[in-house]
Amino acid sequence: MKKIPIPEEKIYELSKKYPTPFYIYDEKGIIDSLKSLQNAFNWCNYKEYFAVKATPTPYILRKLKENNCGMDCSSMTELILSERVGAVGENILFTSNNTPMEEYKKALELKAIINFDDINHIQKLKRLYSLPEIGSIRYTPEKAYGTGIIGNPKEAKFGVPYNRLIEGYELLKQEGIKKFGLHAMIISNTLDINIIARNTELIFEAALKISKKLNINFSFIDIGGGFGIPYHPQEKEINLEELSIRIKDLYFEYFIKNNMKPRIFTENGRYITGPHGYLITKVLYIKESYKIYAGVDANMSSLMRPAIYGAYHHISVLGKSKTKKVRKYDVVGSLCENNDKFAINRELPELEEEDILIIHDVGAHGHSMGFNYNGKLRPAEFIYDGKEFKMIRRAETIDDYFSTIQGGDIYV
Ligand SMILES: Cc1ncc(COP(=O)(O)O)c(C=O)c1O
Image 1 (cartoon, rainbow, N blue to C red):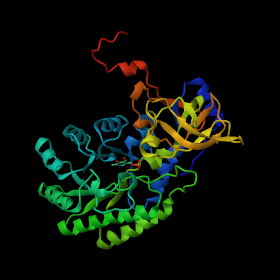
Image 2: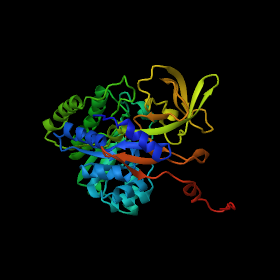
Image 3: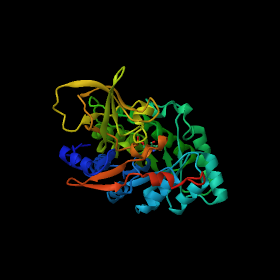
């Protein structure tokens, strides 16, 4: 995963042309990250399905699709987005939970691969519509390794334990299904390849046991997403080659030795787009109170990871990388919430009003998690193609905000 910095003068020019805050993405970085995954796992008829929820921006989805990437969807809108960028059939995975039946119906229409989150869904879908050609169920092992954001599997609302898997595949067999898949999504933002490999082994182990017990063959094993990225400058990126070797050994042990050759799927989001997105925001005020606050024009409504996960996002200041004088700041937005902070006690070059801050590694689960609290509007998105910026989503306007309102005697 190579990160190529976007030239500062280009960002500066853009900030003069368009109001901040806005997101920028580096197209080449995104495609290179996809290719590094595809190259590392090229030994197992591998396919990466990009987790659409991470960056549901059609320009980016289309570029990924053009580079042989599938789409991993979890809602009706994400299915439609994938359809509109031209992905259909086995290029779409549908991995959802607590899933409304009409969303399954849409997935069936698109001939997407469906990962069932529960066995009851299989029966209900059969009653209401029909079953897909491939039967795949989401597995949540009782004990997993280092599961971070997903937490204790026993408290996870996603997927089913092993005994329910057995019931599920038996049911699918009785219904005449001949092709099977197994899905799990256990890790989240994991940089440790031991943890990724050990959790992968849990999935492979279950697949082998089910195959032997029910005499079925898996066409694919989807080991989920969750490969981490180094948000903090001191963190090291995943060694993909080493991870690939670890998984290849497990593949040999569990499948090749047993005359099986399932495809391996992943559904990473963050690994592909995360490092290649930046939130550009301007300092509005410096406020000296019990601490020093740098108030910026972005809010947690445009990037909520620091507020909800305490996530670290690196911040640099346009044109001040060589500034010697530093101070400690809380970098804050203007929401009426005290956790509306992008950084706490962060050492930064001494700031002034109008300085442009670059918040790093926001390409995944950044813009897409945005919301409208306090009537704040979602920012625009731009792609950098190595030469120029192109707008790929305009900023929301006040008219957009009002467009869904009915009644209430609003005078325009
Ligand atoms: C089912 C599923 N697949 C894939 C992902 C992508 O995770 P990441 O972007 O960390 O790779 C998520 C994240 O929420 C998920 O819930």
